[in-house]
Image (cartoon, rainbow, N blue to C red; front, side, top):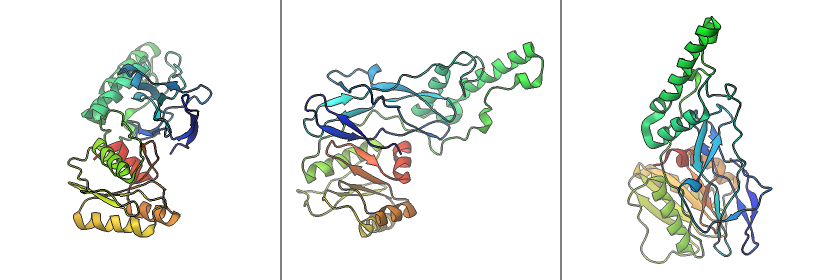
Length: 295
């Protein structure tokens, strides 16, 4: 996971912690937008579809993809800022990794966008693979040899992602001021992940107690207290999910104890931490996998 970096709000000058989101490349490797910490954040007053996406290149396979542009809501004044990202360096023609001879990064980016639309890794990579093989045959005709006919990257050796990425718009965080806000934010985030009919309990949440959220195939617990969630809390939500044959998820405002995190890793329970900006952040591998695959 990427490390949290300090971001100063241009409106109230408060320093907020921000962790760049991690997305799954079509090859299965994690990628995240490279933040440009030397440039100040840009005040977001008007949102457009084109400006909401940024091109990112996978350091493993060299594939170029488009992902949501990093944004942060100030926990003090609520100002939303867009974080600068290092521009994508264009490789010289024929030398870019993972693009194949004659196939530009745009073809790979189109393949990834097709994969995020749900066409699957095989369909998404068909165009780029075909171009690479076709260009390899052309190169063999001019270079005279089987070695010259091979593409720069053999797609057969690129492992498919464990689960196709789910197309989703960027999550819109809601500032957390009360325990009820924390529960509402967790419910919104679960719906954003793809869980349907997320039910919140009636009445006002008790600040000193965790709150259950239920949906078909889901048992989630939201801990709005100021103490880190412990081992017993993680095991309880796991048992509830086991009884209901459902996925167990835990949200906490104050983080987790070391024992709780170790046990969650053993049981495969996704753990999320919510800050006052209302943006849940995954803190273990099962949570990363849930964000990447969705419900």
